Length: 351
Image 1 (cartoon, rainbow, N blue to C red):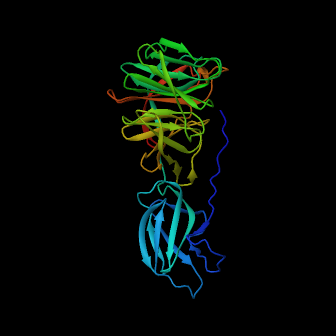
Image 2 (image 1 turned 90 degrees about the vertical axis):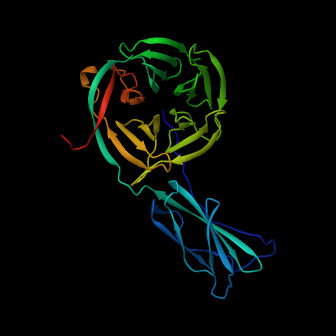
Image 3 (image 1 turned 180 degrees about the vertical axis):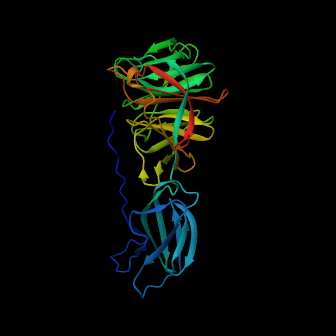
């Protein structure tokens, strides 16, 4: 699947509470520069630019609309970034000269300041996997897998036996939909569609369709998981959306970055012991993400996990992460893989 990368462009805006004629003393920023990049935890020095004769009572500062402090005059103000989310952050300065106020804004970019730890894998067990399954969603519940499979005309939702890889229950999805990620919430299964701008709700026992829900601002449907309270949804960009666990409405999001910049094409998701595990589409990597700020803490390299002898002409890319929360087992597979693997994680370089 291919999605157009969205471009976030920061634009410095100037607004005034005054509706009179033009002025030549409208403030701007000396610091920081528009779109300047900082590592999470770095301090951002902010300085308002005004003509020397301008008189300022105070300047109030905000980050993404939330007040962070006030400074008398136009002295440099320092904004800490610890605790902020990664990505584009909007800094506002409200300049008060005692008679009127001007608001100026500028964007900065926060990336992760942590170099992700590198892990590889050890295969503990190998199980069969249906080579017709274009795996989009994968979860483990009560001894079996919940799997949603994609492609127009052949999309399915199924419960799958671990040992045999065979479907215990399945439904075919209407041919006009490309099924994507799925997750279990109570006695319901939620499943995304790719470009159709909506998800489906099913009864988890009968797989009977119960309803649908629309997307709001997210671009597409890719991966889906559940953290016990909220749904976490990827859309093929570097953004993960948080949806209300009851009405499925988008409430917030994080943008995912490592120490080099944003990491796009986040695909299948799994929530494991407080972290988000995400396949990076068309790679053999899984990113382990801090859900509080979007920072990638680990990369898991699964290169070579499916031996060449087990590949077929239709074998596609790695995709599918499932966690057995009771047995503490981690499973991975891929689109039309012939095998599904139980693995342990191993620090890269260790013997």
